[in-house]
Length: 365
Ligand code: KG4
Ligand code: ZN
Image (cartoon, rainbow, N blue to C red; front, side):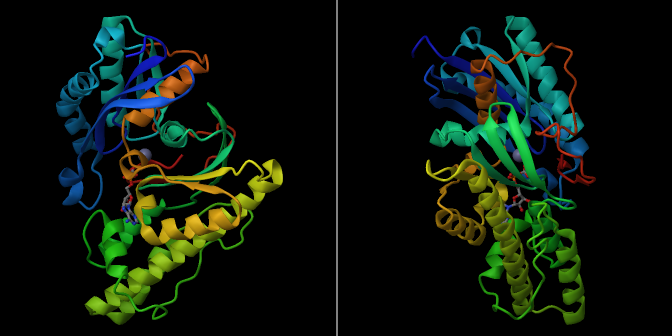
């Protein structure tokens, strides 16, 4: 292994994945994941149809030590050769954040290593530089169970939030729609699967926020519209469920397409497209084929590259936290003191106006 560059241990416990990873960043900026261990709590929460914060925190406590040891073993980097510890310190569920922070701080203190509290959203935002060496500036669409944001990524620690959800996150809307139609959890894959058998045009739903210049999102009205249609159709046949799933998916896809097409126009007006800038998508909802394909076409027709990191790096993981730590350290940003407090809400863009709302998977920030 080269002696230059940075080797960072990352820890992620902000929601329902317990994760630890070791990432190397070479002096030329090339990143390598040396280990990446993720334990999902999906089964723990499935019966409740959503994440139960107290159960999540208890599970992090009982599994994190083991995962950190495994990540170090898998990486073949002895703990004393780790250059710094990077831990998600927000936004997210406060109990889980505390578990990760206490563990990371204890390691940093015992080993006399630098410690960094990382914004979870910064982890998502910078992943495309780890996987695809994407140059600044680029546009990020983050669509997960807890977040729905359009972010201009200008540099490490330099973000402009162009849009966010004013109510539900998109993954949350998929999950709630699935629940009200009697499908399982997590709802996104269930809705997508059911929609395959749907009849196009049988139900029509509005496209939220169409052409609204604020670039924000709204999904809770759709969920209500689906509920009303479902009640009017009750008892629901399998076909009616499929038709409603398709109508929901068509509507949210059109809304994302509309918001992103405006964002790409705004980006092009400001930076041009000669350098073929990138549209990056991240988050669990990016697994949806209809959404992905639509965004891919939109990016291509606007002169953008379309980048979707592999799914395991789109969803929550600790490699992205270690990488964000490496990028910050390489940029000479300061370390954090060991009394750093967790933040359940922590917008990536400190200047963005706060919007109300707190999803079941944590702060929408
Ligand atoms: O990024 P993620 O794994 O976890 C966090 O929210 O942090 O995202 C999970 C969300 C869930 O709401 C899930 O229903 C949604 O992503 N999801 C999907 C699909 N796969 C996962 N939504 C739509 N279509 C999918 N295929
Ligand atoms: Zn996330």
